[in-house]
Amino acid sequence: MSDQDRITELEIALAHQNRTVEEMSAEMAAQGQRVERLEKTLKALVQRLLDLEESAAPRPEATRPPHY
Image 1 (cartoon, rainbow, N blue to C red):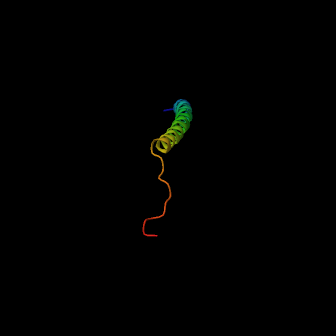
Image 2: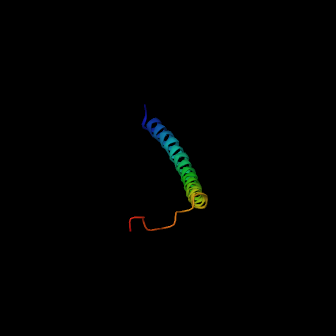
Image 3: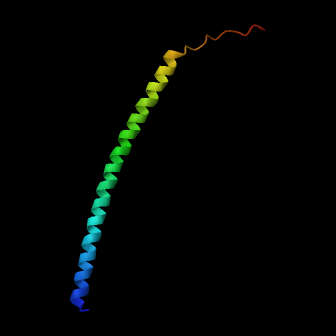
């Protein structure tokens, strides 16, 4: 195998690696956006649940126990 063939193979391998890195980077960016959306949704759902719990079950009044 000549030096030129080896260089050509290395260039091809490097091009494939660069493409793979770019694809992975794009996928990671997309996943990051999905995670942010899911975190926002989860936060909104938790707040909604807390609001529903608060409105559904009124808190008992603070009274003195009968033995006082």
